[in-house]
View 1 (cartoon, one colour):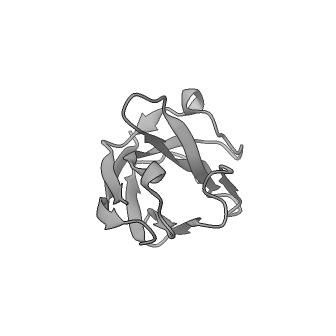
View 2 (cartoon, rainbow, N blue to C red):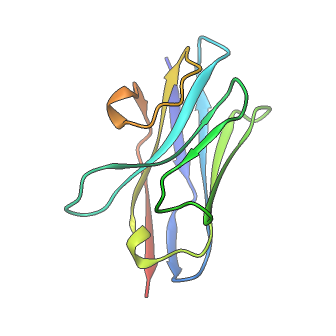
Length: 125
């Protein structure tokens, strides 16, 4: 079974940077997608970014384009989310999620089967 462990959250001032990591294990197939989602207090969970293992294709929500970068280190089975120019509205619990055995760019949380425990990101103004 796929297991995901996030790390790297914390408190940062507006304009600062953080890098989140998602250590993944247990995939049964070579092709999978890993996504980052976030949920702020009182708000619905939203998709932030995702990456395909098959060809490295990426997706970004409009709210983070140009500021966040998703990448993967296949040797370490880890996906990173580099977050720059952080804003107070980026404050949320960030989750990584995965779907095994797919080459599809999946952007809806309802399409994901496996979830990490989440890591808190707080951006102060």
